[in-house]
Length: 465
Image (tube, rainbow, N blue to C red; front, top):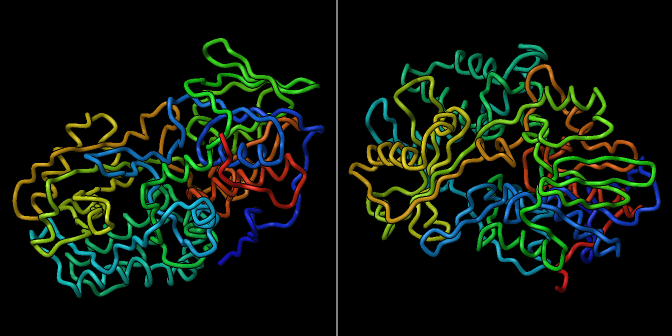
């Protein structure tokens, strides 16, 4: 567990030092991207009385924290949970600005359905599967790392682990499917492309993994962080040029923003496709790290119904095990159990999410409905639906970052280092402590605000318009 030092609206990034390596003075900062990392930087700089402007290509704020309204209910199509909420800066900020949060742990009421056998799993079977995913396999990782070596993948570990059990054929298939899903959910990629050495090596705050969810969705937190900031929506940065005296951010519509410094918070997927031009170019080691790190898929299909009829069949949250042994387990969350409304939300990890890349939203909904209909026992007719598309989003290109075999967390940290003393970087992909988490993105924004302000801690809070 890591303890954040937080007092009276003052935040640090888990460290007491003041990051350096920038030119001074800091006079005007251009932040590229209005996700939680960029908004955190801008909020702290504005609190510190540094002029700051945020340019955002989308017509909304939040980035991969995106809450939609589905039949009057707020549904998060990107990040949902505040994982490990005790001491978590996101949860602390929520309390500070008066954003309500609710416990949202699905495990106590989790069920299971195996399409391969066409039957619902017993309570004992579900309990065994959860113990396998969250206890037995994680506890075996050190032994598996020692046996399989530093170049092994998470897939190698799953095969070695399941191969040593005395499970029958169906149980072994479901164990593989469940463990593959656990890795895919964490890495947003296939277990073959996740390094075993660096699997689940992030630090943890306190509390349950699933933890809490903002009551009205993440938009309430994002809006609080953005309140009072100078945010220019629909303004896409195309190039960043560094000169002796500062930086110029050239935007696609011809507009420019000049500053003493820029903070780039675009996702790794945008950097990987070179959508943002840098002059001078990024250093070779930075380009190599961008290319080596992984940025996979994770999508959601949300379905609204007139009432939560699945409760009448004794179902709530659900794991669905496909017939195909090469397919990973699907997780379906009962948002009615979280007080959101009569909704089911299917989370499609990398392997399942890949089928959505070339499918329409309608096709994705129909596929999920067929699967759920089999599990529940009758056809389902939703009154509304919402489908994410992070993989094809030009301002994202995927879900979040992971470390493949052959790469290391040091390369993630390298992406958080400034260049030319004037171009800084933030985002979940720029720090190895909580890669992939919203709180990791927020903490990276705190780090860069510390760097610019020359302080060991910064202020955050809701600003007056």
